[in-house]
Amino acid sequence: MLHNTSFSFNASSGGFSDSADQGAGKAGAVFVISALHNDNGNDAGMPLVRAAVTGCANVFDENFAGDAGSSPVDNADVYGVDRLDLALPCGDRIFHDGLEVR
View 1 (cartoon, one colour):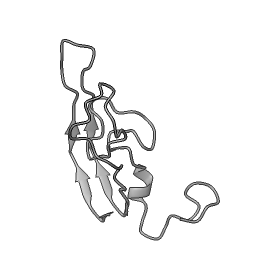
View 2 (cartoon, one colour; view 1 turned 90 degrees about the vertical axis):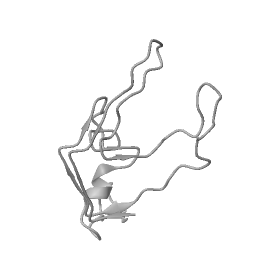
View 3 (tube, rainbow, N blue to C red; view 1 turned 90 degrees about the horizontal axis):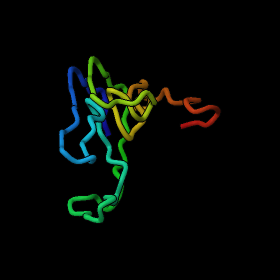
């Protein structure tokens, strides 16, 4: 649970390699791994279950990710978790995703 935390001026950048498997810079502040298995079959160090990251009232300011996407779950601030969920004031999640109450 991330609560009332400020993430400012954090950065991530991809790695460099001679192969096509170069690293990607995702999420300058909060990165939640989305895969449980590696494509190459080597799962050493991989988690058994995906982390559940929750929170509210967090602030994201001037973070950078070299390969950031443009979606709520892949951007300069976060990867694998909804940025809006983490930034909304605590108790203010009603109707975030339509008509469901959270």
